[in-house]
Image 1 (cartoon, rainbow, N blue to C red):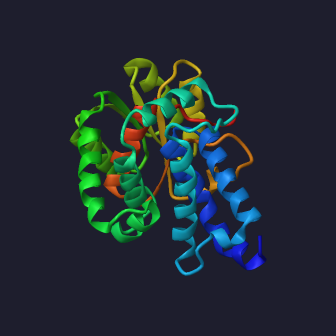
Image 2 (cartoon, rainbow, N blue to C red; image 1 turned 60 degrees about the vertical axis):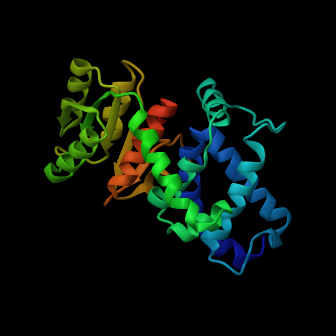
Length: 267
């Protein structure tokens, strides 16, 4: 890959990996598609459209590869967990475009026009797809949510978002100890976890403790997502950036419950 092209694409790779795992349901499958994308670029650098922004070109290529393999394809991705295999089957059984549009415009920050360019569809189709995605969120199974967050205003915002989706807030915890005790007591169906907590304890450690007792989906929230997207250890499937767009939280909650994805954090 030419050095200038590598430099142009490198800043966007951690976020493409985040998007890929949210779209496919896990780190293994998401990273497999990203590797396939990078291999295609290495083998044929001209495959990247240099006439558009590098982020749009990179995501467009990723979508071309993902769309060409995820529906009725003979391509096999080695090492998929049973959870990820199930997620792939569920995606294959339904129209995935609404989730793509929602994730691209909320989690990844694309405009409607740029999301359409990535997906290869007319721009006027994006808003109807977003409406379909929000309707799908409303149909998700209701659950009880544990919020691990030490900032009162952020905790209030998350509480409102959770309740708007029709879920119940089981508890709000400000420390690792409080979080573990609340999880054992309330048995939530989903956790929203900050990383740095009130007493200096770690939300990551709190999640590890919780997952040692039972399995449930986890969404991490941090102002520094790059710290958990190093590729040097197992990483969370769902990772949101502060400050967050409420639509991003809604999208992540929907995806996490759809895939029933647990956090992947180093032991």
